Image 1: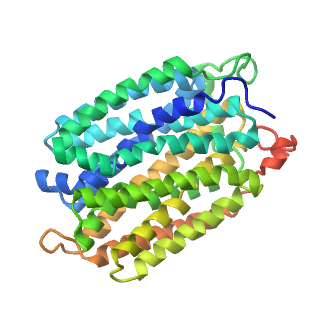
Image 2: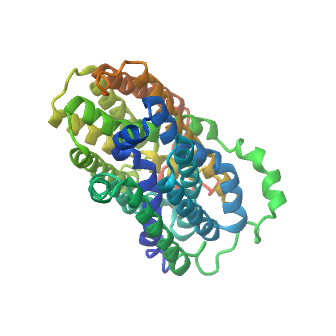
Image 3: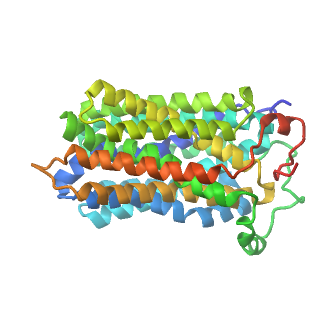
Length: 422
């Protein structure tokens, strides 16, 4: 089965929009030492500040899911991107923890609908067995935002300061509205909502409790609390301070290592997408990638004083193996009816971002439990964070073993309906 005519242009268009979301969620790893020094922020405050983006992102998911189902992904995300612009400007202008947190909250809300909206659109334009590949390429393009948040952001901060860098980011985010308006449509020509008409807002709200009754959604909720958190707690927060405190790297040096980690994440996303068709399994990919991620975190926790080259390789392996979120989203989408896709995917995205927020906040408490010496935290603090992330992810994978597989071959043959029924 081929994609609908015009579908391929959606991938770069939505990928460019996703750049903003990926950029903002990862910026604090590079600028954390500057913020801590300039504003006198503690490790606990940095964990809370970084987690504010993800708490806001997570809590926005239910209303955003309603908006996606009622008004469509295109219109919803145009409005949300403008909220992100406001958040970047507030962050750039702030001189207190409260102001920075407000900026991060607005950025989290503004970024909260891009991935779920894109999955909804792709599910209408692409056949089910091609969905993971389309999403993986889009996410790989969007991961350019993570790259921009590493070495390029470090260079911009060094040249202009972090405040000017965020003003520039706000301008670029505003420009990203154009691809949505020019190239994106909610469905292909002739597409109609399930049942022939869009549900009323009251009907959508009335059905909210039924989202929790979608098959296996509880187990997806549990695993998605852990997956992205395992990567972004390092890439988006503690990777930079770890490289500064343990290996003595400056902002540009830290940026280079985090850039390598980001590239590994992109390669992971590009690999997992086609592998679900090649291996004809989604559950197997998630369990395999998750097991490797747990193993890498265990190595980081167990090896005392790893040389920089080994730490870099382990960071890259973590980012590559841990890029299983897209396969999880594709797997869960195969078990959802179309009319509830926005709310169902939003609920699981809430779990993902809530997990990141909790991971970053708890990790700040873990690091803060160790006394800093001359402003630097000991290696034991970071090894404790790695161990914590490994244990939590292992528990999530155990819950996920209860989920039935949704094989691309079954979807191609029509043996599984859009709601996951065989």
